[in-house]
Image (cartoon, rainbow, N blue to C red; front, side):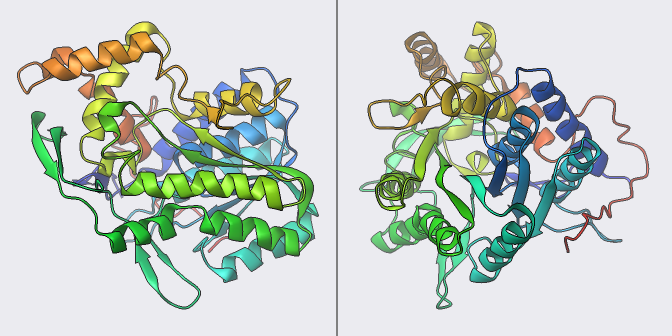
Length: 392
């Protein structure tokens, strides 16, 4: 099959196996080129197939020499369609890790379910004994609870409607958009999906099974951003969920017998999740332009290597006054945000090229799905079925 990108809305419905493999190798090579980290040795990554979760797994394995067990929710390719990018990323990571003598196994299924938790614990007990780090990096549109209730998350403002600029990335036009507020039920659902309840369930299940070290570290990912994006994120429905996630970190640290839980506030980047949030892609494209000009732009792998090496496992854990690890420190520098704000005020369809890095945004978007990787022949016939040992 010759695989080309097929864009529908804010997602790509195809993924390129060899492109994903090349991009995973780029990330591994980056970490290999950096100093080693005296960090965790047995790591569970929940949500391990893309973005910050995948970068966390690569950083743990190649900076710390850790054995990694990943939880994903992806599918392999077939005769009629490609698999997901997350599947191909995971297949590539396992291939490289095992060739380099690193333990790497993956479990595919719904991370919210008891079935997958039990399967993960069984694998930990059999292969690793106990884990000393848990990375929680889930970003899902819905969650099926144990009683069968389906909760669906929404990306809306709260309190009142909000109007600001947004971008049609396909047509490269800037216009105003008005986002209606979420209902209380929608907010509750979003917190159920994206809050800390399932994170705590994982930690409780691991502790009950004696599958986690008593002084392990666990980290979950969040975003705060500037006031410009607050109505859609920090003060929006997703922000309510992230506030719950932060409270859960405090509860885990206080109640789980020595386990230290942290929230890592990461930089705004092109991900499947961020691409779906109105207003945010326009902000990201402006931020890219400014940070690249300043020479301090980072992608997922640079962020996660720095998280492991400098922030969590350096001489001491680096947190702000709220106990959060601020990986968005460079994004939120005063001079960066001042320039972003000035460009935001001036941006329009006519000034888009001079005010924003739209090409950079699209480049990162395509790379999420294995496209625009250096050295890959995108006109070649691809075998889109890529098995992962022990994974269905």
